[in-house]
Length: 363
Image (cartoon, rainbow, N blue to C red; front, side):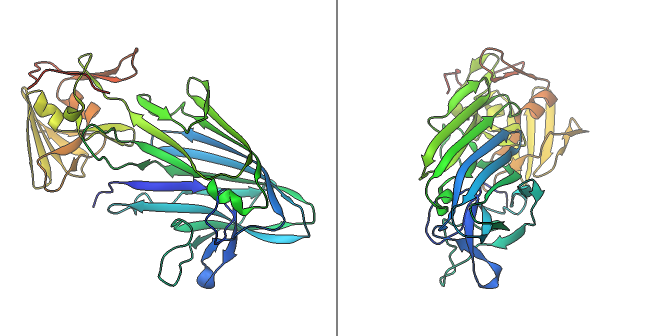
């Protein structure tokens, strides 16, 4: 079954039973090797944290630098970075954080991947974190240590509720678990770099983020006791049709897949094309061309000749439509797609247009 909505929560935290903040967190061990958040560490304080989030085509590369100080006797702390994934359908292909590595004072740490602890009813503690990246860090009395975590996580995606709702991708960094350390977080700085994100996406970081460049934002806080996580949303802009916006319903459903804007074949029917969806296949007739596509397959047939799509189509169960890669299909049908320099939107140009209704304004 195709995944409809997936959520990744990327963060580092101290584990405890109290539902508090995330970041690198202090953990408690449970029978069977599972872990759960500690309520609060008595002596180790998070002096500061710096998080760099670099948005790409398929997901985000994240680097976190934490400074901890032990204000008590020598101790050994079990630190954990939480991971949370859920989906409608099979999320196995998207699953865990990728390329997760951690360093303590510049030396690579040994990481143990552990499941989250569950209570007697089988539910996980602490907001359903599914697993933890765990390491042991020793502190001498009054010692300061620097911990670095790096990883890549795919974008999550919001389920589309109605035809006029833009589908959002997002990446979340968990701040709430940071409350597991002694006292508030001294200083927190989070930067967002969208230089390598898909160019026709609108980037929306949390409130109070300051734009410091064309595609850069910075968020800062002092004496932080976070109650909310840090989430960046990415929204694709509605494309232009021969330089004009058309109604959002014509493009429903609009989604992103590996940097490709996916639109419904309903878009082609509005332009006078014909679409036949049956038995997990989709046949599009537009002008003099016939394009035959199979669900989950990049290989297609254009006028009986094999061609390749940029990504596979999705045939929707119990539906007479499918979702296709806009740029790839339009080009195969003889059209052109460019980027409008004024709006940053994709501009689709097709010949022999015969819309069933007049174009109207869209978001």
